[in-house]
Length: 535
Image (cartoon, rainbow, N blue to C red; front, top):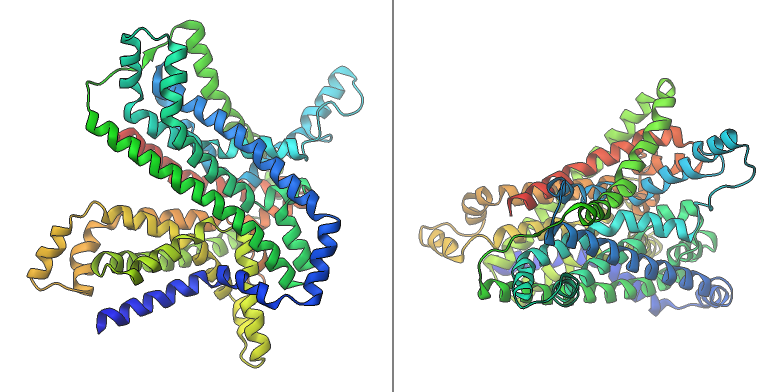
């Protein structure tokens, strides 16, 4: 009886976490005349442009991250050259940079009134614009490519490290030249990893709000906000969000399929087994080429944006509002801390139920919760406020709208919908390292239920739980769309303030909270690079 009550409670929690997604589908049952008029008007005017812009942006970023991620992964995995050991982990540094921070940094330095163009005009007497407009689709492709290529690099490097060196050595002994070994051995081996990495990168592009809004690019996400805020029609916004959600679901399916193929290749390689083969040692020109291939992404994706943000920060150091910065930091830390603790506890409960009481209910709860991370923040906001509006209209005196929109409850709910999956993945990876025989032995000694989780599992899952909580903490700190809409009054966070100050062209003031977000993002990147070095 206790088991079924616990499973029912977990299913209820999973339903609460997926309610925003389910409400989007239910919005089609309330297809009124006003929503139809809004959709028809947008379809006849701006919606095709939004869709084409999003499609072009995704295609361009897909090509960019695939080429850059694959090139860097091949360079550090298959070849040996000076600086390779440092570049192996340095290539992960752009993961610490939110894409919208990179956009602010490049805009401040490269725009018409920026220091580069002003300096060139003063030095050479040139007139007019000397560089293309940064705030454009081309600029957005540049920002996304250098911010998101680590997804492809990380997965492709893992795939190549499994068997690439041994298979390329075998191909060399059979007389295949280097170019053919790369083309016919390394690239096919890494293709599933590249597909999975590209799918993850495109999900980030579709979920973006900061870069598109700051650059004035009219993407499909902008259409959702316009239908909701400018045209004041929640139903139309929800129905547009379902289209974006379907696209994300397709990308998620591609990523899962690629990951399955990647695991199959990995296991097959382990069974084959052969002597270790060393990476190919490069000399002079080839070594310089490989070095440049790896250095340039780090330079454009991390080093230059940080330097560009440090310039206005140091220039206006005496005018910085430190008291406000401490308040913004406190708000961010409180929201991130509460969300990280809640998400980790939910993840522990779900993972324990799936292990201790394997059933269709427990597996269904885990799958439902895992969908949240793939849902863009803008879609979660629309899906969350839609049932709140229905409930408020049905029970006007309940105060549901107040508790969700005027307190931290709504924003924490949105965070849990999106980021519980992050903690769940970390906890489940920890559980995979615990043999089932351990549970059987504990049950024979009388430890069941909560005692089994607390006395046996908890001490062995400390690192996995800490890693999951840290990842959720960092993701919440950087989250922009949901925070921008659902944050309580007078509780701005670092991400929101960075966006607002940059939008008002106060980049000198935006530099401090932006760099604080970068420092926070460096923590999981350093842990990840340390883990990779141990492999």
